[in-house]
Length: 468
Image (cartoon, rainbow, N blue to C red; front, side):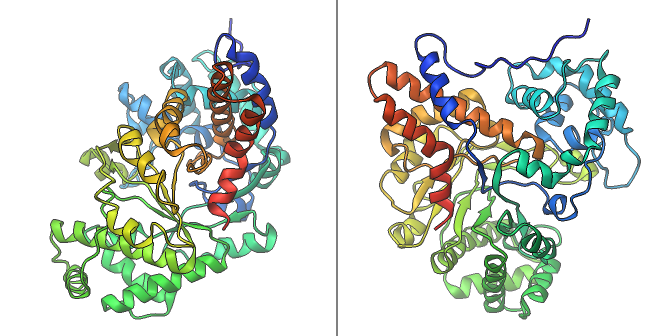
């Protein structure tokens, strides 16, 4: 007999005396609007407002949390529909879905299981859990649901109570989709400036992208000075399109500026295709400083996501391209790395730096003390491998005593999986409700203060961090 799909109403809330308090706190925040100021949902989803594709295309193929778990158990990426660089056909959608359902037990205890159960039960209205036996039934039920007008992307923005959602867009993006969205949904779907592809000078295709950058900006980028001016112009274009923030995904948090002649030399060497690994790393750190300087000028909130070694397996990268789940965290140092930026801009009015990490050993040792003294810094929510129930609890435990609550950014969902956004915010609100409830029953926090804090963590802090 198929297993019923029934997410428990008290899921992720604490046990014992704190549970009743946590229920009341969560009830006060669960229906607040969602502010999604950092994420990776494709802007085209909302610009075209077309019906979603099949269940596999929506819920399996683009979700790296899902595919990496299946690959870790020996499932071939071809059987999961990951697009190949050589264009060869991979599995059919229904077969991909069957593969996922037959491995449903792999997600026990993971945040993916929590999010997916929420999506299945509360968004899609499913009544039975995935399994090899129910795969076809669920595939057909979801497919029928996705064909309904109320499941179009724009309709779901309203259903999910998403007040604002930010996409992530390359510095070379023409922003045409955002121009359409600004006319159709003013202020609702906004871009985020992501310059990574044009600041890492040793990446394949970098010189061509720099030419594209210049074309978009209307500036000659054959010189380092022209390159910097083109970046400034593109930032202005993003601001005009409604952007509130930039996003930087570097391996290191190093932000050490070079002198102008050294930066120009590396830039010119890179244009010739002769840059060394050491010079490329130095230039990336230099450009983080330059991006901070530009944020201090134009007011775009600077988000830094360091510490992930991308495309760890060269074979997977070669066959399927970048960003296919083979990304592994590394130890990350912040205190010395960010000192040049914080010395220059840490007390500068109008500059805001939101710091994320996947190295939680840095929370209490470095990040909380940094946020606890520099007015420009906010600590971003637990990210990627840490946006789990226990990861979020540890975040509060490790940073609150030094940084407090109000030097954190509020929740950001940071996902490509659009249907998971409500589940991610709900989990964050439940974990915060539980953390605050424990403080209440330990008489370390008054209950009325806990209710106000819960509202701030769920909504007000994100708004005050990003809307300046």
